[in-house]
Image (cartoon, rainbow, N blue to C red):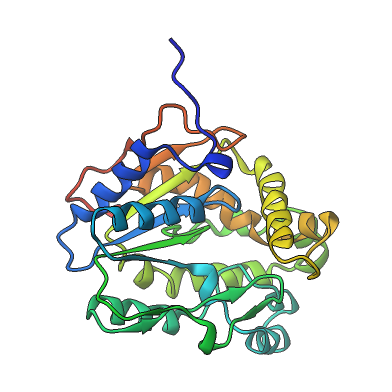
Length: 289
């Protein structure tokens, strides 16, 4: 008998998977567990994070979500990086375009069980929302679900792998490799401290990078449909946009199946084959061990 398939973007992830993720996070010995959901663009991370928060609420627990996208640097800061380091850094997304002190500030407040306002980023406006529009968490949390497209991904340590341009963006705008090497250096030096604050790491594993442009286009259409009258990216603009993420995305595809605590294999339609994640690193061990 063929196991049923589930499509997270239309119907959400299967309840068995949501419960498995919630149980795995709550089994941590941390005072406020942090479950990191890592997955390439459009893989359903936000969907699963919302389902976990809803399921936690049904159990009488207080949970919240934070995306690494919510701590993008404001545009004025990225414009400064574009002037002083490389023009490609005006575009949000790659390592080095996040406000990591802000992320640590949020984690500090969560772990100390203080009230906190959770940052939010407006992708259509390409700007962080004003602090007055950040949702406030007044009660101590029992769980934080932290989601992002490259959570847990290590830096590229093979210098030769950084030499050749990977796509048209790199060939045309980063022929000398300054941008990609700078981003890789930030990934090596700045992000591990944030990854270490996550108690469990789950990876939503797509069949390959080739599905990402289509998945991200569906996500873009949903963003625009939810806010009619506001302009977003066209399909050609989006095809170019995902090239900013391609190098680190391919690195995540190679590394995270070996580093994550659990892996959720997805097919090209984001379906989970049997509704459960595969265990990679048993509880009590660190993905970095």
